[in-house]
Amino acid sequence: MIQVQPVIMAGGSGTRLWPLSRAGYPKQFLVLSGNESLFQLAARRLAALAEPDLALAPPCIVGNEEHRFLVLDQLREIRQEPGSVLLEPCGRNTAPALTLAALAALEDGADPVLVVTPADQTVTDPAAFTAALQRAVRIAAEGAIAILGIAPDRPETGYGYIRTTDDAAGLAVAQFVEKPDLETAQRYLAEGGYYWNSGMFVLRASVWMQALERFRPDIAAATRAAWAQRRSDAKFVRPGKAEFAAVPAESVDYAVMERCPGTDIPLRMVALDAGWSDLGAWEAVWQVATKDDDGNACVGDALIADSRNTLVHATSRLVGVVGLHDVVVVETADAVLVSDRARSQEVKQIVSRLGAEQRGEQALHRKVHRPWGWYDSIDSGERFQVKHIMVKPGASLSLQMHHHRAEHWVVVSGTAEIVNGDKTILLTENQSTYIPLGQTHRLANPGKVPLEIIEVQSGSYLGEDDIVRFEDTYGRT
Image 1 (cartoon, rainbow, N blue to C red):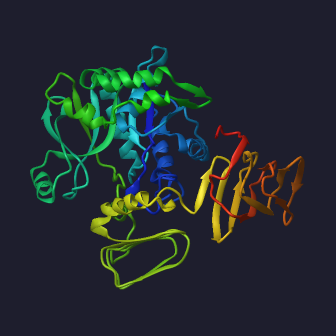
Image 2 (spheres, rainbow, N blue to C red; image 1 turned 180 degrees about the horizontal axis):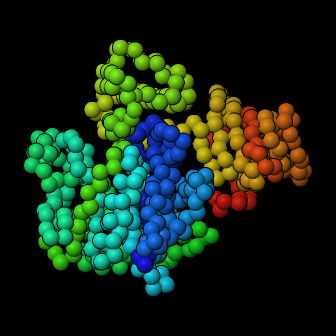
Image 3 (cartoon, rainbow, N blue to C red; image 1 turned 60 degrees about the vertical axis):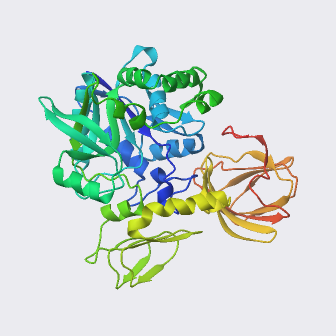
């Protein structure tokens, strides 16, 4: 019986899919088509690996502290529970992230096969994906490192490549090559033997640690030090913050995989033909989308006329386009992107400028998700702001107060339990209350259906940092 530990890397920021993907709600948690997010689809695909000879553990998620409740909520929506959620205090790239998962897997003397996949990929043939990954698991169980490679169908310049050679055991990895220019990518396609690097790896936890200690002992030692200072809170495991910040940032490829060819570490590639895409930019989203006879793809309320090979993604209003060729149009409630489709990778330049100018659109949507639910800032002006707030059943906001604003709450649906100073009251539909400036207060949903309210804030300063928390269910300060 082969012990299998799925590992989902869910810590990316997905900046090239802005404005839909943002730091506070990155692409892996977005529903780009259908009814489930990329993260949920990844979890479902890994759950399908179970076989009579493969003992599948609950998934280990490696992600960002800020997204911890998104991870739990989205898994529970598809009726899954994680084995553990490893929370990175800061981003240190994929090699330290995989090392955390390996150290967790090696606890109590176990040494499972780790099936490591990013959370933001998509496939169109789940059965082929499962078969390829099961083959990779059996190869890794014998001590090799197995990598999933994608046979290229076009001269793609946005992916790294794997050069392979045939031997008695199948495809051996001879070399990793960087993202090529167009001429080089065309040559790879013509020569054959080159595959796109999918970023999916299958290997025993001990094999990863041995290879890391051989090639990057500094990363291994620093990550072990952070792991030794970990704290656990139910499903959440937090490595030492200061220690993890000192870990050198490096990718799995650079730290280990690219150093393995030519050594005694067996590195095998399993070809994956399952309609794979990493959705790294809007061009990739267009590639996998369902298109009309003119090559146009649309999501949401969109009308397209006299246009070809264009992607329109509308989230909050009608979008009409006329006479566009090879263009991407993405509309959200607070930002619109229009880009040449072939240059959609360059969206990160816009995100960099937003960050440099400290614009909120870089990190957050107008609708902001919180552990207790969400709020949508539907209107604002000088000295006022209006929010639509949803509180999940059984959830509550922190006990808090504000120095610079007062608030009016009107219940739209559900039941609200409200602490307002020294009083606790229950309000139902169409009832309201007033929270004076400086008053201690809390909003909770004691019911079994979502609570929705309209909040009107008024005052001299309305920023989210004007919150003094006294008690918080979710450990926020």
